[in-house]
Length: 113
Image (cartoon, rainbow, N blue to C red):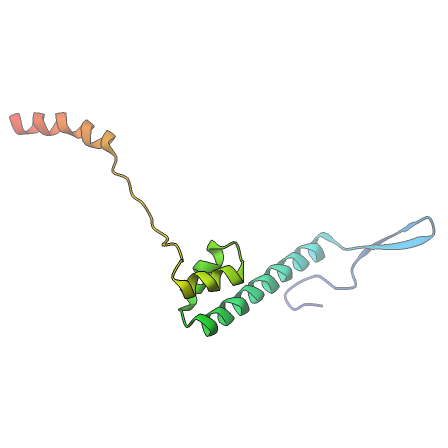
């Protein structure tokens, strides 16, 4: 029994189908399995990024960004970092002219008062 959790690993639903006993996990067991799967994936990604840091001598963040930018293709990410082909992640901010044009008549009105 997991502390703080009412789930017992042995609590499984079972049914008999044509003389064969089939064990079906409960919803809670399915959720816990999915969470542990996510944790394993994060651990694997962390290990890959650490290997990239060792090979390329770039920062952890640069390696993580490049790995994400190459859809988790470690070879391409390393090649891009070593050759300097990595793309810059830029946030583009556009000016809104709608608000500016709406304020001009108000400013003119205020200055004439």
